Length: 392
Length: 208
Picture 1 (cartoon, each protein chain N blue to C red):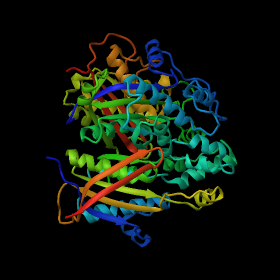
Picture 2: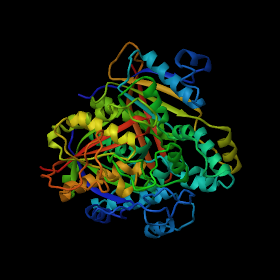
Picture 3: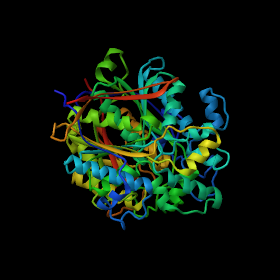
Picture 4: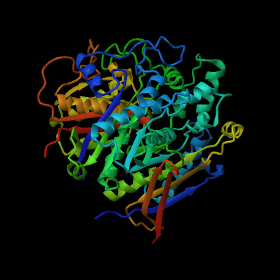
């Protein structure tokens, strides 16, 4: 990094809690939020999901906006997480902020409800990813820059990466970055078509893993130049030290056997952070629970860490795979790991797989100074960041 | 010292007669109209630029390959949730275009997709511009790709909506090097948002 980039706020809503404190509590207790579908209107009750435990009208109430049934769940989740992030950073009344959000579902949850004959002008206008980001920005009114990244499951981590770039290049001093995704019948059926959904709670890195569970949620962090944070006396949660993105260039939905894209992304992030692999104490893996992802990610991890593997765990069995929001939700879990000095347990893991890393389940660990967070998307869009404890 | 950012290739609206030069018909038989046009535009821009491989591939698309989303939505509403349409689902994902360009050209570099209405392309340009300025990359392919289907037209007309999405495939190659192909320079990119005017963007070029 050409400049030090600090994390000064965060907000999250997921299957394991409606704010940072609740998410932390569930992670510490090892409690999964994945269960039988309740809010999404779908016939596929055989697939457990990680739903946020709030209906749309409950979220409207929390946000103090009138409920009309036309609000996209993606937007509501995003507003809740951005609200907590701004609050925690002490920026509720600060103007000229930038918002970069990652999403793929966007307004699809409303479009599919009214498709094809009852699509009104506002539903059509609110369908695309960008209009959702704008509605989140306009709910608060303190953003004068907004854009949207849509790289499938790596969207939110890429939003963090681009936000860092904007600060490095001096475009902005404070940026809210992350992602939001609601469940939709559209992508639940899409993932079902790809035959990668598990009917049990997912088991990342386990020899018997059989697929992923879809989840939903939103996570946003406030990143800030060190100068700005010092100037306003911000409470610094962590430092964003390195970022990397690479293209696997192999297949639309599968990862290459040698995990080339993931390997390159992690290597770039480590090089930018200017640290050694031995400086990394925890990796929050993408670890979806699909046979392909976990084996390829493991191969890439073993190529990067060789015989000096750090603690690794996936948190997908807590939240489900929150797709476009997963990168920032898990970046927040990585920050929590640094703040509270703990490694989230890869709950449910029982059987080692020769092709996979052995994830952290129980046992001692040393002081945690640097955490790597991975997020990989369709099309071999692989991203990785390094978050570190902040010292002067 | 910050790097300059030069435009060294630009491709707009390739004709279908050019497709054969770039695409393998067997490999691309499952690709829709937009994917094929996007791939050819990108590959032609890379060829004109003479750089071989760009360090980054960035695409801006408001709606992605929306023809695929429509097919899946229609099937879900007509046939219900027994449908299985993996190809349409995969290709409905917004980053399909940038990923396929990466896959087709065996490019392992930075890959990103912006989907923010009328400023999708400009957001992508800003990303490339910042990275070249910072020296993180030397070259970038930046594209704009969208399609307007008959179905979108009908649905928008029905409710009196006029979409500002353009049906086009456009590609530029940017470089920090003032090669002999360089013909203009990106001076600045201004993107802003407010409640009343929404999103506005301006790319300021200078002649060289």
